[in-house]
Length: 270
Image 1: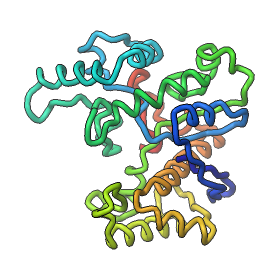
Image 2 (image 1 turned 120 degrees about the vertical axis):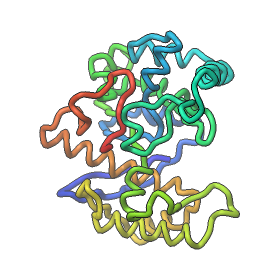
Image 3 (image 1 turned 90 degrees about the horizontal axis):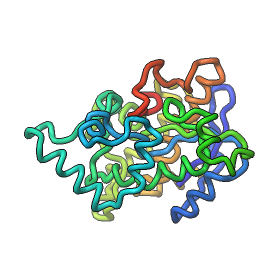
């Protein structure tokens, strides 16, 4: 699910919601000849500690190409072996960005399987010649996909809707859920949480200082989607808009910290 929109004077206008049902649809969307800055809800890198322990390449592009060449069973076997050798309570390695963002370790292959999301999501970004600030510069991106070098500039950032959602849902936001894929858990409390979250977005009640502009139909569509997919896409849109604003104001690297691990990456606005 992609939320598209524009930013003007601190207001993010939601233009629409687009669905990519398959990886082929996703790749086609990435290769559209239009400039964009987009936030993607999956990790762009693995923990350095994990990569060093496994003996994988320490260059991000080489590492991702190695990772893309593995099957899911191979990934699970390698990561499970890493975990088994570690003490209880420290089974998973974390990236530097994870604690502050409250995100799951990017090596997790279950609950949620973000390692597989990375495995599916990042290679098409590389193949489409998309720039990934902090990881893959514009020139490197064009070199990685020379047949697409003629396309308009496209910038991909790692977003995490949970980071913004927790802030907007108040002090107890970490324990207040607004979505579920399980129909039995699509409760009235989660419906109320979605309404509160959307109202807070419209009022600009975030440290990002941006307001979302919705039509009545768009607002109803976000509320009615109990899975939260549409609302998560809008949260990513707001994070990407903030990153574009930072870039437009002259801040380097789309608002990412000046020093980030070029192997691990960073969650935008974390």
